[in-house]
Image (cartoon, rainbow over all chains, first blue to last red; front, side, top):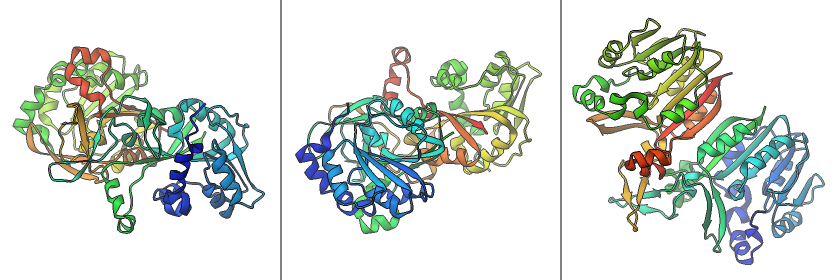
Length: 243
Length: 243
């Protein structure tokens, strides 16, 4: 079973204070790019893997989705999601994505934001996502970019001119990465770009679009600290389709 | 028209001395991975874009290809390729890949090794490759990895422990990169991973396999200088299919 770091009190307190936890999708700089990769959600049956506070689930219903099931490992997050929602067509379930069972052919869109890097057996999960989608159904997700996850030392460095560089190493050393994020011991799984894309293809998906999040000029004006995100990709966004 | 750096005397002399120029495919460490991504070539009509000294063309015929057309911008390289070949079913043509015209539906496999990073308008070339393939035809290529091409300063650095790091920056600054390789002023074009993969998808290809070249343990034992290639990807290898 995956680590459930979200229910750790220190982690939860830190995570709850993130701009995207407070402000929702509008505070996630990659959201406009991810939204542009979604099909028209009107009338769709959607599953949100790792729904967190439920921001996407609510957006999807407001945008005309037929129903949304939000799934998360963290009861604390689900409690808050439920408290913020009054919509009979959104239901939240607690489950570990690595062990839960999926219904077959019951869903038009599976969405997952910044969760898959916590999954150890990605191939197994992708196979289940494929099964739960109807033929032609969409899978749209974001994940931490392997270039962002790979290095032993996850910190910006500077070159001789004082300009930021990302000290990449260990790209092909796939597997567990234990990092500190609000609390020590946060476990993630690094996979190369090739490994992730081939896992999708081998699970029966056609890759429709691959995006590496880069902030827009407007976003950098509003949040100058985002400028460094033009030097190396932080998030990988993928749209795929069950064929 | 693309730069033809290959006919520059200094470049040609330096390039001709590379292990892969002397020893052919067996001296290209990524060749086993690329070969594994090829369809069975027996009976196929093949085009080799940027055929250089013709090593792949000869391998393909020896492996049972029906015919191979090798295309290169460099007359000097083609002269040597022709001199080394006595096979009526291999023909070599001089052409600029950016401006040449392709016949329609006449080819089962298009192959290209480490050439596409010299192409400025990749979308236009991919569209022509798609056209020249029969439906179901394969396109297998290698290209310098964007992580390898991106940095302003293309040189290994070391971390505080003395271990090699690749100082990544400028990943999203796509476009021309002028570097020194045997001679100053070698012009290449940097594109993100997303840009290259989406160009393929938009040209009508289904992506079948994405590989980032990493040397095997045996290769590192034989060539210890390859060990650093485990820190960051140097080559991107892609197999796609006209659908």
